[in-house]
Amino acid sequence: MRLPFRHPARLLLATLLMAGCQSTGATAPVATGASAPGTATAAVQPVAQQPASFPEWLAALRAEALGQGIRPQTFDRAFQRVKLSDRVVELDGAQPEFTRQVWQYLDSAVNEKRVQDGRQKLQEHAALLSRITRRTGVPGEILVAFWGVESDFGKSTGNFSVIDALTTLAFEGRRAAYFRSELLAALRILDSGDIAPERMTGSWAGAMGQTQFMPTVFLRNAVDEDGDGHRDIWGSMPDVLASTAKFVLANGWRPGESWGQEVRLPDSFPYDQAELSITKPLSDWRRLGVRPVDGSDLGGEGSAAILVLAGHRGPAFLVRDNFRAIMRYNPSTSYSLAVAMLADRMTGKPGVRGPWPREEQALSRDERIDLQQRLASLGLEPGAADGIVGANTRNAVRRFQASVGEIPDGFATKALLERLRQRS
Ligand SMILES: [Ca+2]
Image (cartoon, rainbow, N blue to C red):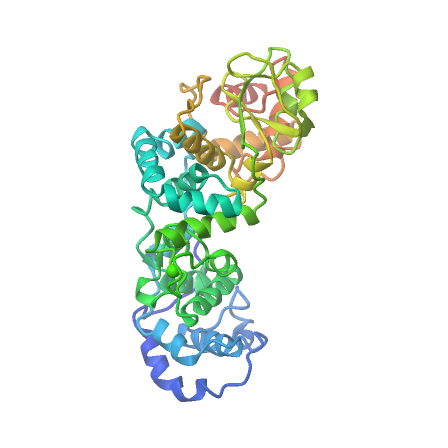
């Protein structure tokens, strides 16, 4: 969805603005954000906080940035050639009609080429990785797996100017407040001299460099491992891998533990217990018949959750705290499984063994909404009909499955939607 907003001239407005406010900026009073423009036009603008024009908005941002201690020359250089990007707005508003099934995502994120490349990177950077692992306890294969999934080992880091992208999103995006604080963080990075504005590139959403850090993540976690005085996640391998390790450790990685393992569940398994939010001691899972995928006895201590991402006919995973630590980099179970699997494959462990139900086609967004509305009309409480299948929707699917005598695995399929449609 685009905001009801217009800006006739998208190009180089900032240059004009800068010429006008260069001198006032240095002595501008501390901006509090309360002076943000927009109040005068609130009565006629549906989005109350939006200013009337980009130059006004940028002037307010400049005052706020300078109030936070960012030097005027840093700000003016960063915005010298700023361009609002239609492409960024388009990507921000996109609601993909189809989401990929988990196996489709894994096929692409953990393909054979990437496994081979990862093994080579492990060797190539062995000394550096073992130094970082000694210090942080995060295994080298995990660091290289993040690097591979985030940016294909630095080959795919995004070519957007981070300042352009964040400016666009902060000015007219759907989450303007969030991106405004990321933009101010980006300015702090430029102010610290870690990177020149023209080298500060990233994804359309402002995820930067080989680690795809958002600016606030950079400020908390980026490390100058090679000691050249710059935290360079764009071009320095020591900085890239040490920064990844610091972030992963901060996200709760437990040294010496694994992310988990693929398991085999008995037919009698209570599938309503297979949710990331349900953690049990390993002894409980053993009692419920959970075994490693090779059929041996489930050993070990501690607690874990059982994750089933494609129904009872698909593979199952026992996931531990480190799986959640991976998810704090990117909050998706598919993502976390991709990082875990890539790390495993690089060290010679097998990939996913259980077969995925590859004949199952993903539901379209309209179908997912239809599913949610039908579950709601049966009183099964799937949550908002937003087309996003989360825990509430899965639990509603489970209630429906149980009511018709099916295994309650919570997997929303075309067949299940068809059955729901026939009931009403
Ligand atoms: Ca450095």
